[in-house]
Image (cartoon, rainbow, N blue to C red):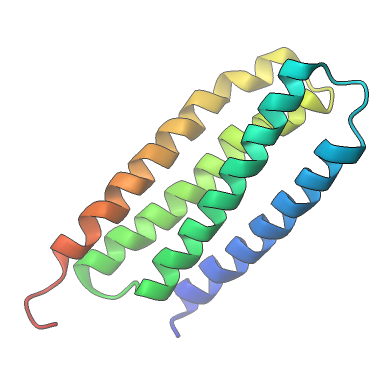
Length: 129
C-alpha cells in the first residue's frame, strides 16, 4: 500500500475516532447548549462520520493513476471539509467566538467538491485497466 494511502487511512481512523467522541460528548456532556446548537453539533458529528468513511473509500479504491490522483484530492477535500465545517461547529458549541462558524461554508464547499471529484474519478482511469 502506498504511503499516501496509509496516511489517509490513518487520518480517517483518527477522524472517525474523533466523531465517535464528539457523538458521546454531544449526547452526554453538553447540558448548557440550546437545541439549535445541539442539532448543529449532531450534524457536524454525522458529517464527520460520513466523510471519514469517504476518505476510507477513496484510499481503498486506489490512488494510482489519473483517477487515483483525483480520488486522493477528494480525500484531502474531505479532510479540509471536516476541519473547517465540523471543527468550527464543534468549537462554537464548546464556547468559541461566534465568528468561528464563518469558515463552515468553506468546509461545506470542500465536502461538495470532494464528492464531485470522487464521482468523476472512475471516468479518469487509464484505458490500460
